Image (cartoon, rainbow, N blue to C red):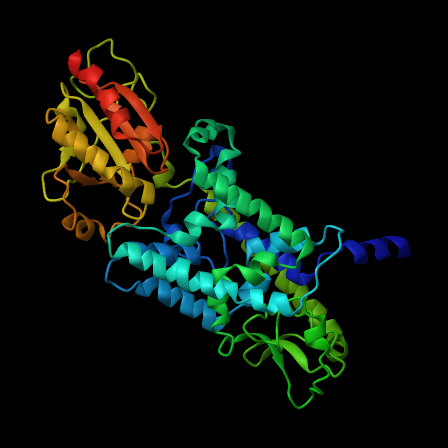
Length: 488
């Protein structure tokens, strides 16, 4: 019995580790996304989770605050992104970098990698200097570059696009690992190769350096670090008990100068090494964790309270998992009755090439509603895009060029229904004359079966789909698709 107890004591995860695991599960509770290889786009995606967790992860039920900030800055022009700034301020004031220590899935990944037995690089003067790099990345890639391109009406969430390892690991690899997305390998280019190399380098560094990405490169941690003097939840020092022995700073693996500063992730590792029990984890005046000596007199009560807290946490986790995966009306199959003019021997309606395209009606910006069946007899090109999708914006000129070169072709650019408040403002500043429409959430799902952007579908005069793929296109590809249809 003693041996079993001893073994359990050695392998039992800490309370912080369990919280990290629960947070990762809650952030990515959409199990259906992993099964179907799709990005969840439900209403909860309007909300930001506290930690770094890629929006494009198949299971993600919320948005990444860092990605949301970049997209807001990149796509809102001269309007301040008050909602995102308000959410980040709320997170910063209440939790600050406690989020890094307890609620960040990528932080958990880094800590698990660091457990691999290898020689470790300890913090030193060089690592303390490198810890400032993340503030430079915050300023340049998260703020300045998106704002610069926003002024040119071209959205570029620079950190997400060029560096973010969480996006590569959770988003790209998370989607590509599903066999249903095998065809998307053709979309990969040098940008993905570079990001994949960056991911490998960062993960490798985390084996030898404690939380290498968190300490040196994470702009979200830098942002939360700005609230170090104000956050309500975190480790606090009772100055009347502190002897300034320095054990806390020496024990910490982060590049802190003192407990609770902008580099501190409030993991609580310093609490038990303090010889005077001067450090505790506080939520305002409520003590969440004290040293073992401080907790000993009320151990029984604490154990009972913790047992209740863990049961409540498990129940909450189960409820979130159930709610996140219960089918809703939005998940129901989109009705797709054949268009009335279809011949009796027409193929079935569906998203696959060779099938009839399902009919739909959607509102057009500055014009009448567009109904697909009314354009039977014409070649129809549908482009699914969004202002916040950089590849989408980059390829819009090709569709405009096609619109000018082939006036008999019906071209419609359909904007995603996810974030729509800046579409009309964006279009007003562009030279496009082709029609633009607003998806209601059903068209892209019903016609393409996937909500990934960009997407293009080409429909022949008989209403049959001849091309339907996710990924960027060129003008040459578009022209090669429509010319044979015009000659028939």
